[in-house]
Image (cartoon, rainbow, N blue to C red; front, side, top):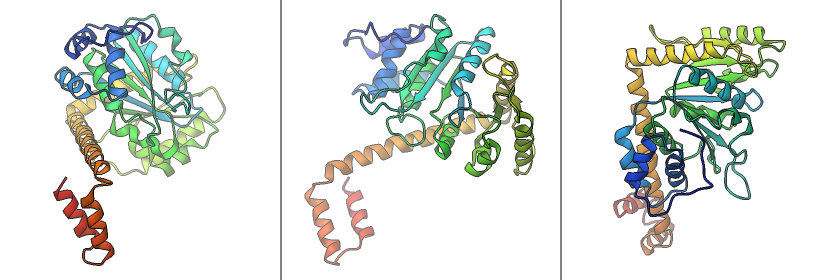
Length: 326
């Protein structure tokens, strides 16, 4: 599998089933087309989802989050190198801020990952967050499904890093890496923002700078105060220098160890079921919102509003009536 090649698009007439078949064979353009279809909310998105789902569930989804400036993109690139050295097929979904002009990913395909551009075992795709507050694109679950079906062993999801909202990554990933850096007060901020609860592995990057050891001690101290049930995973803290690759093999080992723990404990299935419940709920709510938007000028809604204004109905009763007629 190679890098996204959007310059040579497929003909619009290529059936979804054929696109999925080509994606499974590792054809990068088919993968790109499928992700574009889900990102652009193509009318065929339901057909795409139905065709992909039977071929998913194998990839280990690893979320990478942290404040801006901690080295997420550099760390992601270093992890790709280490995973490829083990023969793994790797997908990277890098969620970027949205361009206010084009609506597309502001940072594009990220020049710092160019080392992997010609590697057929790597697929890198940037997605725009499009104003989605959690730091992830609303289409990310379906894009992950494409990469999973395309045969990726590991999919790295790198978020934009938007403060407290970055905890959303935990709902999308099997394993969540939280990156911190010395001198940024990240240990205390992690505790304040609830990041400690979602981190499965903590990575103190830029460990060649002063303060790395104290950041690790600070983290270790606050983690030790977190109540965890017997047999629960205890998040490790790894020091890295992503620019040189120092510490990255240890991170890869911890990722594998966490996956093994999840599998043995049954938590992997539990996390994935919870993730699917949230996705199904979100799709259902989106459909309900669409129907409400259609009813916004509907006579029934206007009548109910008049009834509430006149005091003949309360808002809850009016809402119940409206939902019954959706």
